Amino acid sequence: MGRVRRTWWRGGAAVLLLAAIAGLVWFEPWALWVDETVREAPPSAAAPTARPRADRPPPAPAAEPVTVARGTFVGHEHPTTGTARIVRLADGTAVLRVEGLDTSSGPDVRVWLSDAPVREGKDGWHVFDDGRHVSLGKLKGNKGDQNYPLPAGVDWEEYASVSIWCDRFDVSFGAASLVRT
Image (cartoon, rainbow, N blue to C red):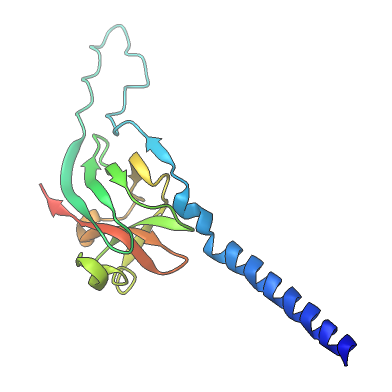
């Protein structure tokens, strides 16, 4: 009887150890305490790449980028602050510019454009994947300033908000309503 009990205890301990390891891999709790600060320069007008011919005047300088929408982040699952801007460049492309971001790190955190309205508090945690959304990629850092080019063919005006979205747990860390300027 003693030998059977020891075998059960060892088997149970092995199962608990494997469950603990799997939980650590899945939840990545250390990510909540690791900050990554990003300091990307604002998007700028493209400089001319070709040298002008001697018999032609130099090309006109490219137009400055224009902010066409902006919003301020509110916290959801985690306290989140900062601003979001949609910036149109001279070549017609658009970039989401996130400035002064301060949120938590986490596993598989992404930046989304969504057609969902921003709701404050717990009401806003899970709404951004209910309708249409576009992932602009992984969050580069949980602090600082960063740029996310909008994919070709994406009309930002079809999306009402930006969410810092944890894809692993389907929850918004924070979001900003996009308001035309």
